[in-house]
Length: 74
Image (cartoon, rainbow, N blue to C red; front, side, top):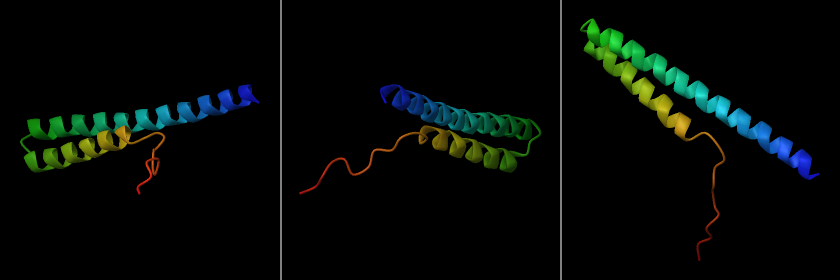
C-alpha cells in the first residue's frame, strides 16, 4: 500500500514538473521573440511578447498542489 502511494506521488510530481517546464520553455520562447522584435525596432510587438512570457512564468509558479481552505475562520 505504501509503495503504491509512493509511486502515485512520484507520478504526480513528475507530471507537475513536466507542466512547469513546459510553461518555462514557452516563456523562454516569448522572451527570445521579444528580443528579436526589439532589435528590429518593433517595440510594440516586443512588449506583447514580454507580457506573454511573464504570463507563462506566472503560470509556471502556480503549478502544483494548491492549499485551499486549510485555515478555518471562526
